[in-house]
Length: 357
Ligand SMILES: Nc1nc2c(c(=O)[nH]1)N[C@H]1C(S)=C(S)[C@@H](COP(=O)(O)O)O[C@H]1N2
Ligand SMILES: [Mo]
Image (cartoon, rainbow, N blue to C red; front, side, top):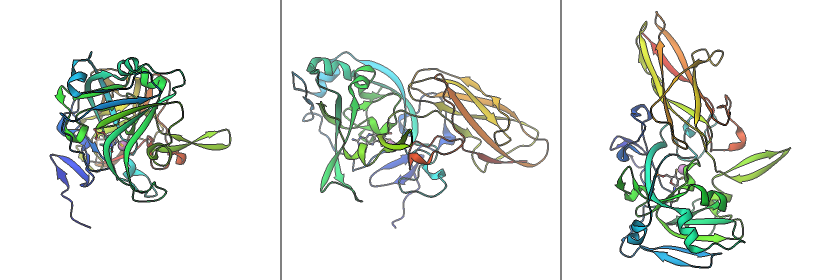
């Protein structure tokens, strides 16, 4: 194994090629994650795109197929929305039987404000036919899949969205926190699919295909799937909505905090297509829970910061801290891992062990 530098610009290097960088979650500051601290998740090498030659093409079950240049997109009506992106494999390092995949800790998540053109505006111009049920979003990046089952040769990264979601709140974004998208985050154009795990937010967009059949591409029929129980029969579904979750930024696992003192326990919580209703903290493995204070901005599909003033024990001790979130749709973060989710959608409560004194 070649030696990896373990840090790049303060980010944890999980993989160099393709580039996979994690934010050390203990550095969580405000509501907005600075661009240089935002995690990076790539399946293939980052494509080099000359914007003068780049086009976004829309085709398929539409009356009006066309291409847009970067300039034309910039001239369309723009919208800015906050949205939290979380990788579906975030927290994988904490799964008890070790599993394959990038070993993300707490920081494959970030919140940014995104500016671009609503996907619905482009679909309107394309005049979608009534038979259409999905839109496939295709990236410019390509590569070979290492392990079977896999298609032969190179494939591009692609995911589809049901038409209802595509027409609601999906953004074709060219700015992140007021800056032009960087190459690693999808320049010149990426999708932002609010409330969904971030595999849906396709970067380096080049083509959108409206279809009348469900798309069963690699990244939604082989990879990024989970088993859902319908009665007794497990059925395989593409991963979509984010699951309710609170993460503790500080103290960190293994950190020492002073005895008989007030320590600020803080972090962020989020959920798919809902707001965070409450975050609770436990110091006794979940027997009793204490409400944390929600702070800062509150927006749908964006994380909510929270904090708790902890009066630490008078004497030296070991303590375990847990946080759990409940969302505005009444969904509570579970205590146990759901094994039907394989290596993805990891949102069970994670204990943080600290030394007191
Ligand atoms: N074209 C393309 N889009 C992509 C990916 C990719 O590899 N290629 N990775 C996806 C995954 S799994 C995640 S978690 C997010 C990460 O976005 P970020 O790198 O801007 O944080 O991009 C998604 N969009
Ligand atoms: Mo991801």
